[in-house]
Figure 1 (cartoon, rainbow, N blue to C red):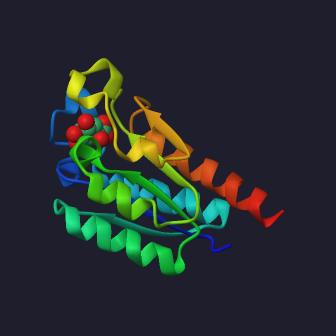
Figure 2: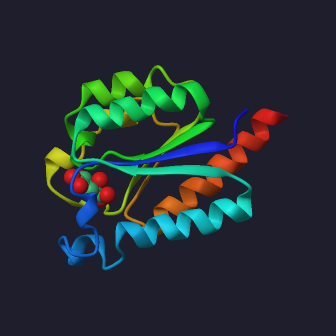
Length: 149
Ligand code: DQA
């Protein structure tokens, strides 16, 4: 099983740190990527870290992950609540999928309570801030280890 993990981020997450910091905090996406790279090194995982405001790019990265990756960590941002297309793409991927939300979506508007991606995700992390990405990576490392047997 490949130790390559795709970490995918949806729309507006490029503004992390500037965008509604009372909800999403002051860490930037570059900070999150740096933290993930450091931890991935410790866990002996390789990562591809991407962000896009365009749905099709996220779908294309999932297709790419099918060819090479062992797991996907995804914060689909607003596409979580709207995108059957991202769900369909994730359903073509065989490895573990962990869904991450920085904020606790269940404490927010009701339209954020439903996630298409959760229909595929093996685990969901919400409301733990940007630390959620680290926890997702640790879980992925564990699952890849278990698969190796
Ligand atoms: C988010 C929650 C979504 O509802 C929202 O649209 C986002 C970010 C989060 O990380 O908390 O853009 O996925």
